[in-house]
Length: 380
Image (cartoon, rainbow, N blue to C red):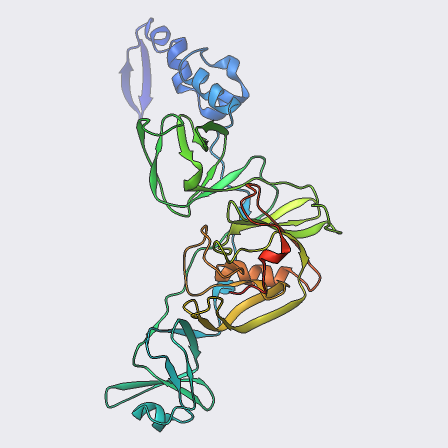
């Protein structure tokens, strides 16, 4: 029994002699109560079962503690382009006029861009009598009929402080993980979303597909992921410790410098028949904005016309690394042979690369043809 003065008022405190002993946690309780840092650094102070054992197992397997990628924030200004874009869906082609009045009345076109995958950039906009006219360059106007504004993609990759110590991947489609590798296995309650990044802890082949372990008892099949597996080995043919690698199977791009992976992202390379050519190349020309146009099919059904393609690095004939403002489908082939990048990624790469920078393009699946006669000049 203790007598204590609180505010000069005597207060009687009665403590049972056994209460201090009974308040001590058991070994199992101690395992649950141990902070995670204490469990990892001083496991002898915690119980041998329960939380300590599970946490130790997760730590050994690399799942704990949960770690973000060793990345740093990118300047959002990298994604700001000095252009505003329009898409034309006119089936009869888009007429270009030499003055505002002709464009307003849709009379006397100076020339016509044929129908297809057609995008313009504009520098001024006028509205009169319910009609809209855009100035695309000084002295060139289009009527707004059949034109729509373009929403720019906002995805971007990661700039890295150091090379990650294990592979990681972007999720390509929102889905739930499965508890075991293989189709028909029980789903977990964990949803992963498109463009989310996950660590790769293991891989298992089931049938003709790889399944990747992305967490404790969580798996995703290969077609749902674009994997980055850092490889610091300088590719054969690259003559300095500074290069860009493009994995056509995974649709990923890696930037290496001085023995480190410094940037990684998703790309969209050439579609089947318009492949991006594997090989070793060098950047031979840089443009902060360039017009691209062309067609490969005899009937010109694949015609494209793209104004002010931003941050373009030509490296293999007409094939280039460049920003793509017209889609948000990164992680899947989309182009006529060029390597499409998000705007932030393209701008970062444009700032980093120089004329002469090495570009290593490869397909570990072997599905992309390597015979030179399969390749023309390429395109966007």
